[in-house]
Image 1 (cartoon, rainbow, N blue to C red):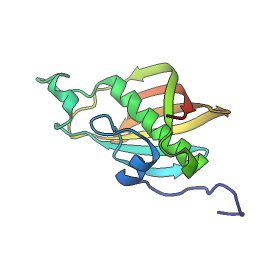
Image 2 (tube, rainbow, N blue to C red; image 1 turned 90 degrees about the vertical axis):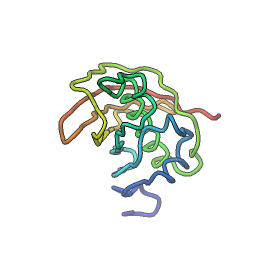
Image 3 (cartoon, rainbow, N blue to C red; image 1 turned 180 degrees about the vertical axis):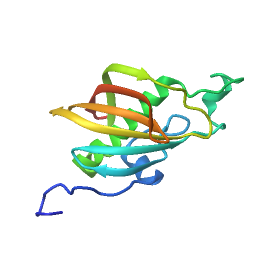
Length: 156
């Protein structure tokens, strides 16, 4: 921290245990394994190791497994939720973050078992309990999906 009470430029990484403290999602719907960089009130980068053992691959599509686009968008939302908690502090751990809108979602190439998905989320705006984010999901540096979305923070 530069000054007492100011927000640090970067707080490093969150492992899976810190993620589970920050957000209420659990297996099989916890879709980020690590947050590799958090810049409070600005951005975060989440990471998902995509494994053939994911339950959704049993039905999507067994002969040619592809991670569903809606789950990629969900991984964006979960990364943003960790960013919100990192920004607002421990009092907001475990609160629910509800989608309000998803705009401009584009899927550029399939995400398959063995991929390491990096989700880059940037805060666009915040008004009280409503936050807006822009996100890109990348595999090996190539954009595979993108979206802009808004979410509201609520108590359970």
